[in-house]
Length: 204
Image 1: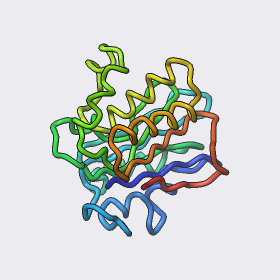
Image 2: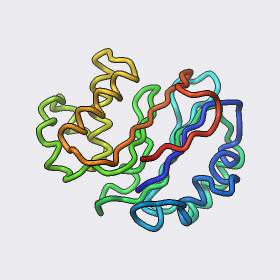
Image 3: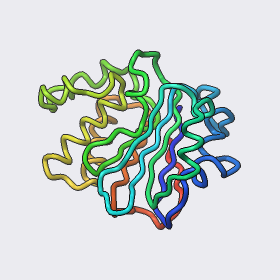
């Protein structure tokens, strides 16, 4: 099970949000607390953040563990933001998608992260394939459940749903198709905060 962090608030260095806290996302990649499945989150990581005056987020993602990436340590020390979404990954199934399978996913001003696992993937969601345009299916960023759930959310956003509507309807649709516990979606975007400022862990 992956670990995630969402933040909206005063401008802070990435490192102060992700690395410095004693039980921050960095530490939870190798010493997670209360993790129900898996022992470490070392199958990739990613962070997306918003820069002042630019509604389109930047992302930094890698296929390996965050503690082994010295470039990220430097980046986290100097890059500052007022909103970010980060994740460290414990892959449910082995695959060849590397960093493409690491959250957060992005499109336009949106960032998206999904925690947990869709039960009996991929068969359980095969019936939802018809709800997506063929081009969306052929251009999925990765071949995992999170990327497919993001495609469902994004399809609703492009059809005019609000962020809340797109997330809620997708969660209900996925839960009906794969009725088992374990999926939570987080999707902050520029200039919108569903919670008071601060760092919010996202999980199941």
